[in-house]
Length: 250
Image 1 (cartoon, rainbow, N blue to C red):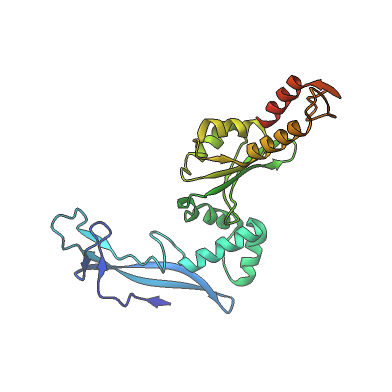
Image 2 (cartoon, rainbow, N blue to C red):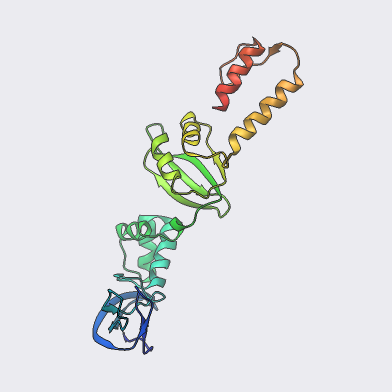
């Protein structure tokens, strides 16, 4: 399928001035969504324009078609979106088998590579951030998962479970207001090192609320409590109780 843009002018990407002075033509080959299960390839004839602005350093530019395909892409935007949705739902291997049935020619590696290139969600700072761990192999190797809890979407996967890597990634979201994290001590350390006073830690609030209620309801200086995180004896003093409480919160 051979196509060409219908417009007569295009805007310079540097100075945004529109120009209709054509410098030359070139062809882009793009894979598109299949038709009746048959793969479709578009041969798009694209123009280069002269920039008429005297102070613009971009003398020649190619016309942008952001709704059709991104720069240097070999697939149309709608095909890339379809591949991303298939990969998010099924993963690499199962996604490639479904894509083949639909007429989309893409291997499992291609599907995963296309998903890694997705940058739309990276520009959105989550207001409520969820932090937890996930298993590469249960009992052996773990990573960290970051989620936007308001939109219900995974925004990042970290290869390891460490305070340093999570702290570095958390600094990329300066607008985060609330953090809901796993109770592991390394995530507590990450929160203390990277977050400002304006960021709320939901786990710490829950723990402080429950422990405070427990102390209020038990006015006696001798407390009987069975195994709080394995840190208390059946009978303990109030000082021992508070020490174990602070350790559990951290």
